[in-house]
Image 1 (tube, rainbow, N blue to C red):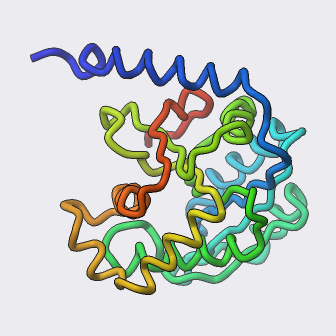
Image 2 (image 1 turned 90 degrees about the vertical axis):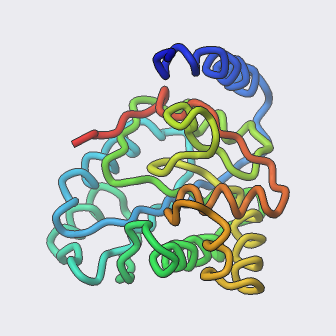
Length: 228
């Protein structure tokens, strides 16, 4: 059996070429990035470092931070005060557990995306970024400013079959379309259509079900996540 890295290599090269081509194109107008973090008290050190990496590298990118605060283990007032000093205007919203497993937690996540999308323009981006994802440059954001895809995420760990969780980006209009689909068909019914009921597979499934333009590219080439 071929090692997975060798098996994936042709697709990896194809996606790198696609990424390079998009980066060489003209931006599609000014976009604001609405960044959703699902975090808690114990993850504060990771979250702070992740936000610090954003602050350091996204100097020419307009973004807003929403922290959906786990109601079972919430970020403290003191911790949030430190975040506000780093990212003025960051929002802290007390939220039901949204780790991403099961229909109930996935539903909580999509309600959070809806919250962010209501503050977004049609050309804006709503993103999910885990607390342990750190950025070392702004190229993924530069790529997304130039892309017409409705969903962009990293697929190279899963043979580019879907956008793996941790860091993925939706057009705000796609969020609204998917939430309309969820309202019409219910989360319980929709998640019965997938083999593994987890948020990233569900998000990709919803996008494909609606015929949206998806891109499972190489995102972690621009960022790094703690593997704990």
